[in-house]
Image 1 (tube, rainbow, N blue to C red):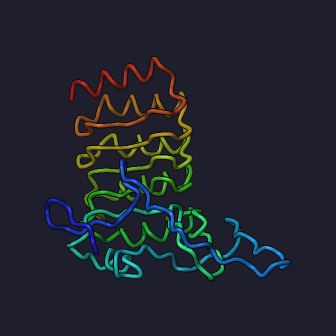
Image 2: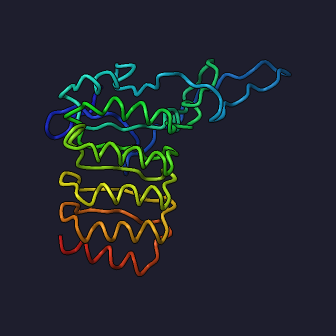
Length: 232
């Protein structure tokens, strides 16, 4: 069933913070016959299903609804499909079922679906290795405002974002008036990215929460960032 927000809108399911993964099934996963060579696991370079799909409850793919601006949806979570699944299956393993998640090409497609959307307020791409290029693509989506979704929250935790991605986000957030929360936990942001985000906070008084724990931002910069957030 679809998840609904306090406003009554549906939200896409995902591994939200604090949510426990589904218990593993007691069934034994099907495997190749005895003596047969093991089935190869897919790599990020192998072809995957195109266009990418983001399921929602009974819906095989919610992206067409996003593109058509369905006003019932306010949250889009790019869940790493199958990452916590313990279900047995005879199907050949796919990139999604092995937890490889959405890459840069898929993110480009998803951002295209979001380009004309006016209802999604939270984009969560956490646990997908989109890197600096992916963060820059999301920054471009934000920069297109007021066109595109009225984003109020960005969650990019564990996304392999480095300094270049943080700088790109800082540049577009400087003048942004809608985003109030940005999550960048456990990435690869260091001194340059941290400094860019600090300078952004000195000019942006709308952003009230910036989560940067478990990066490589110098302590002195983190202290200044925390001070800026305290005076919102």
